[in-house]
Image (cartoon, rainbow, N blue to C red):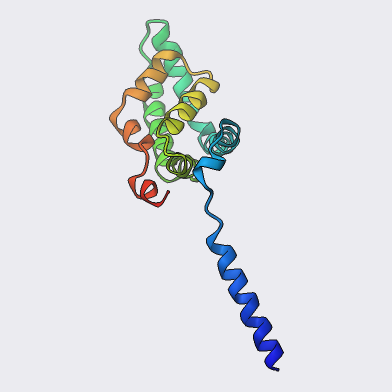
Length: 152
């Protein structure tokens, strides 16, 4: 029985010590390949959740690009799309992953670069992308989380 207790203590000690070593060392892991892989995964999560928001943004952007104003129904759909996108960017796992990545590598540009790439990949016109990126709430949403930065 004493051998069992000793073995159990050793196993628990080893397990607890290995749990402490799971945080990545930024100097070793923050290569462009490592960042790109994780950023792409986070953007894929955002893309899956925001796919319904993109279509009305595209339509409104195309109207404005043609010099026309979207009709009231399109404006209503645009408003709902922006709210849905905002919700995803506030609470979604993808943005949380990007913020953690940004904090781990101490690089706030990871978030803005990933989101710019995401918006461009969706085929949104430049005027809509600039509009979205210029909105104050968007800037707050993509800002690095100071609480995560202190943990990195």
